[in-house]
Length: 152
View (spheres, rainbow, N blue to C red):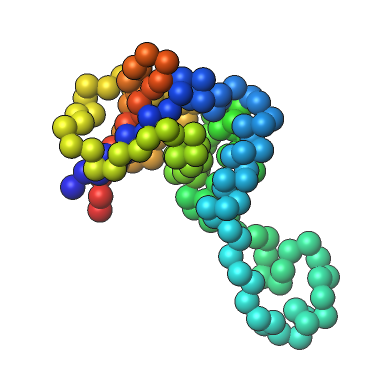
């Protein structure tokens, strides 16, 4: 089954996404921090952990990058219109969708009568994750961004 979401955004807001603006990067970072808080740290795991930080990383290795959760690297890439590695496309798309929801003047979920093949391809500097289609339609001084996602 397919889920379609339509965001109505200003053309200037859509163009700002890859503009390289520091204000856009700061907004994306704040949106990501709110939507994806860091995991809560567990209780002490052993004697070494109770002694305090002996290295930059906790015992057990460097921090794990969570799939689908944007890091500062994806924030900078999306804000400045830079390419993103394919394995981090889901995380970059999460930022795009957070931005669309943030600047949207209207949103419609499971929009009836929306056909993804009638929309122009939304051009981004990275490939979309599998099962996702994004299109754009200009309507005066606003744009409608359609996101089609196959539910699994």
